[in-house]
Amino acid sequence: MTTSTVAFRVHALPGEVLADVRARGVDAFGTPAERLTAAGGEPVRCCLRDAAPGEELLLFGYQPPLPGAASPYREVGAVLAHAEPCAGPAALTGYPADWRGRPQVLRAYDARGWIHDATTVHDGRDPDRVIAELLADPEVVRLHSRNVAWGCYMFAVTRRPAVEPGPR
Image (cartoon, rainbow, N blue to C red; front, top):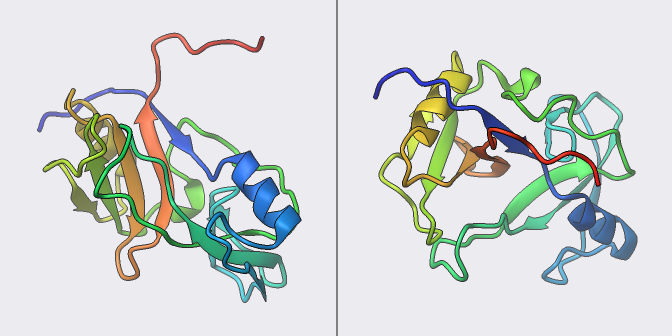
């Protein structure tokens, strides 16, 4: 692949998912969310950073969205989020700062929601470049960043439109 300048958008856990789990105390599948106190360094998916020691977290099951109506590649996995509402990610137009240098799987999906051959592991040194190269393939419509060892979902990535819609 050649170096690309494809702009992308990072997607943290959706606010409505977090609000529902926090309010009901269960995930979308009816499994109770577990309350934990962070030791520090846990990847928190609501604000896309590592937790500080002592922060209150929720551990629950999450099924990240895929393109298409139904895909045999849908999965549910454990994620961590703050137990109380937080400010969310500092930015959505670049790779999360706390997670740079951390190898990750970038699982690519096509418009059907099927895993695409472009799926790869990056070493964490230049994730923005690797993401842009993957999204330069017109068949790739969404990426999921996942932890290498545990396979846990971290965040989604899509192409950023040339002109993003403004507030309504």
